[in-house]
Image (cartoon, rainbow, N blue to C red):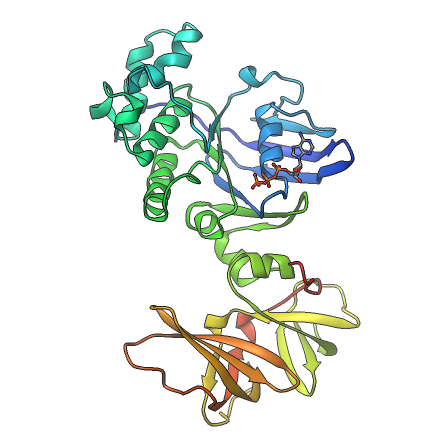
Amino acid sequence: MATDFVARGQDLELVGIRKEFPGFTAIENLDLKIPAGEFFALLGPSGCGKTTTLRIVAGLEEPTSGRVLIGGKDVTATKPHERPVNTVFQNYALFPHMTILENVAFGLRQRKVAEPLKKATESLALVELEHLAQRKPQQLSGGQQQRVALARALVNRPALLLLDEPLGALDLKLRRQMQVELKAIQMEVGLTFLHVTHDQEEAMDMADTVAVMNRGQIEQMGAPEALYDRPKTAFVARFLGQSNIFVGEVVEENSNTISISCNGQRIAAPKARSEKHSGKVALGVRPEKATFHEEKPDLNSDHNLVGPGEIIDIRFTGVSNQYLIDVPGFGDITVFAQNVGKSPVVELGAHVWVSWKVEHAFGLSDLPLKAD
Ligand code: ATP
C-alpha cells in the first residue's frame, strides 16, 4: 500500500445531542467521545437514529440541542464543507462517464486544489486500485466501486471519515473481505472512522469501540469483547448474538455477585450495577458458554447448574450443534456444542443437566421486553 498518504485523525465529541423531527424525537441526550485514530462503530436496528447522528456530525442535519466538537473545536454551527469530515454512503454514486481517476480527482478540481491527479493517484494506491485508474465505473466490480468511493472520500485528507452502511450493497463474501480491507486502510492512515451499521458481526469485527444504539439512545458502549461478554441490558444481550435470559427473584446479593431463584432453580452472575437490586432481576448466559451433562455433575459454587431437562430440538449448523433443552418450570436453554465431526452425543428426548461458570454469566440492569 502507499506510504506517502498523509492524514491526521482528530477526536470527535458529541455533547448532549438531541434531535427532534416534527412529532418525533430521533435522538435523546446522546454523549459520546471518540479518540483520534479510533475505529468506532455505531450499531443498532433500523430507525434507531444512527444515520441522523452521522448527518449531525457531517453538518447535514442541525441538532435541536447539543454540541459537536472535532479536534476540540466546536463545529456545531460550521457548514458541512468547512468541517474536516467526509462521508462514504451505501449508494456511492460515481460519475459513469468519467474514469476512476477523474472521479476521485473531481472534488479536488472543483475546489481548485493543487495537483489533483497526483493526489487522486495516491488515494487510489491506498485502496490498491491504481492499475484501474483509466477504467470507467461500470467496468469495475461492486467491491472495486466501493473502494473508489472510499478513495474519493479519503482524497480530501479528512480528519474524520463517516461511513454509513458502506458495505450494505455488497454480497456477504465481498462484504467480509471489504471489512478486512477497510480496517487495514484505517490502521494505515490513522484516521478516525465513525462507521454506522446494523450488522453486529461487522461492528464487532472491525471496530475498536462499539456503541449499541436503541431508540435514539446509546444503551452501552465499549470494546467488542466487553459488550459481548458483559452486556448490561437485555437489548444489548440479544442484539449482539444469542443469549439465554432468565428472570427470577433475588435470593442473595453481595458486592460483585447476584443470585436469583427461578422456580426452585438457583443461578448466579456477576452484577451489572453496583446498587442493590430489588424485585425481579434478569441474568443471562451465551449458549456457547453452557455445557450439558448426561449425569448430574458434582460442581462447586463457581458454577450454575440447572436440570434435569429434556432435549427438545437439535440443529446442525456446521461449526456447532445447537441444542434446545426444556427444564420444567425454569424455561428453555440453548446450548451450542462444538461439532467435532461425530454425530450428536445425545439424542432428542435425552434428559440432561446444564451448567455454566458463574463468571461466564452476566447480570442485566433491566428486564427483557418482548420487543427486544
Ligand atoms: P436505518 O438503519 O434504517 O438507516 P437509522 O438507525 O439510521 O436507520 P435514522 O435514519 O437516523 O435511523 O432515523 C431515526 C428515526 O428518525 C427514524 O424513525 C426515522 O423515521 C426518523 N427520521 C429520520 N429523518 C427524518 C425526517 N427528516 N423527518 C422525520 N423523521 C425522520
